Image 1 (tube, rainbow, N blue to C red):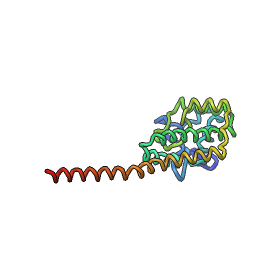
Image 2 (cartoon, rainbow, N blue to C red):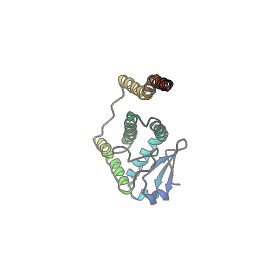
Image 3 (cartoon, one colour):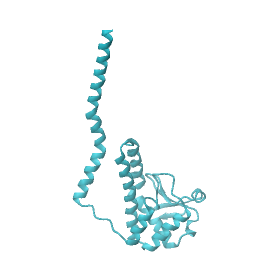
Image 4 (cartoon, helix red, strand yellow):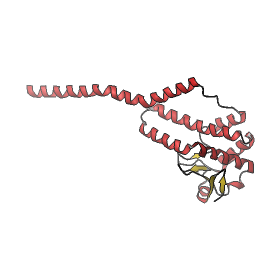
Length: 202
């Protein structure tokens, strides 16, 4: 064990070191930050603290649980392209939210150098529901961090539009299936009647 970071267990992993997997948050309910053994020697103290802060914010936001639910929704609605588009956007928003939280406590230069060092020595976890530091569009994130861009506040109109869009995504396929099902059954019924009529004529 490496100890804890602001109340969250931090565990060293020799396997992550050997597989060159980046630090990440593991678990859905009882979450821990796993780091590759020896990563402290590759980062400065400020960079390492910024990386841990990023992962700690993933824990506070329950991003692993949200990612797991997102994977379930994408598996159920796999045929609906809008769902995958929204899924990619959600991943980006989770990473941007953690980036902004880190910048409130750490300098942008140390944070960016920490991210780039992690990407230099380690790769992303193969598990989609494991929150790491190099997710989403890394180049866009780094540019946003260096520009110190702040996300626009989500006003009432934007919340209403987002809620309507989400309702349409969830209810849309069910509504299409509900309204088209009677027509399909009617066609099947007519086809059987036609077969019976032709059989009687023979």
